[in-house]
Image (cartoon, rainbow, N blue to C red; front, side, top):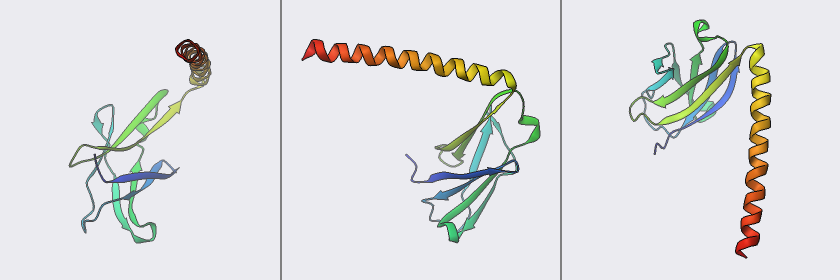
Length: 124
């Protein structure tokens, strides 16, 4: 497991930003960002003493913004360890899909809760 920790600070003007802590080197750590297994270019990592770490900036390319769910994976380029990820959702139809999915998840959770309670009563 990596000692590095990447914490999101914001997504602003098409750039995802986060603070990387746990890195002690003098040279910027190598960070890799992928979308559908393809490397995203333009990632900036710079020292940020005021943040007690390194500022990581990931520009979101316009050509990757399309309807549906777009997930970006941020990892340590040396170890391959996942440090963080972010997901962008686009499209009107998607809103209804998410509501339907949440309703299904709630139903499944209720089913699991009642099964667990029944199990607890039967085994006590």
